[in-house]
View: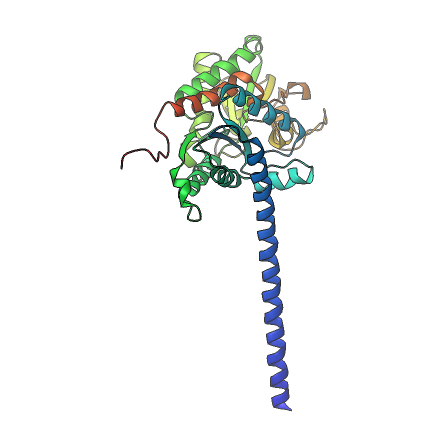
Length: 343
């Protein structure tokens, strides 16, 4: 009897082991199937649109909101008009945004899929443009995607493709000055009338300040105040010591303890952060607690719904031209990877 029990236990253990392996295999097959379907879709898009030997891949974080889809479309069209000798493609870095967009029938894919499809399609040159605002975490992902493409173990032939990489909007101090000029051009009448104009950036959390990107927000506030008006302020949703309460403290320290406040996203598009973290929903009298509109009104300022300008930076063609200037400059400089360069 004891031997029989031991045999039964061994059989049960083997069955359980088989079940686990089977489930694991199913999961692997499912994941592989999803990857293959995405690769197939991107490859078909690239094959259908290949007209030149140079591909331009635009890379952004992404959004699931309706309005940003038109912003993305406009950006792509503006780049395509400028670089008419290139085939232009558009990708997301956010897996969550891609998944939720797919549920709405909007198909976006990660840059790695496009880069592989572009390489297999026989392009001789690949230009990659970051559509992010600061040189932060998301831009690092773009850089890593390009490195993985160039050093692909599965496709060593990709190492023979020339690659250019152009950086985010506020890549340099000159970019900060140019963007400040454009923003002031749009808000000069408001600050001249005594209104306070605030800009909400995203920022990187403490300990994850990739590329010192957070410094761009401080630089932009300083440039706006020094050159144009003391009524400009810049804060973020995710940079330590530069949240909305820190901004309000700076406003009060500057002698601006009340008044009419306008809020504008300092992000490429106006999506979730703009509509929720900044505007605080659609209720005029009951904004979401913690939102910029809620905190500003609580602190004694006047910030009604109408004072929240729900526009992304990429909704301004002049600002898109700053991104475009980065690609133009990259093409005049040494490529990130050049197969023709002397060793």
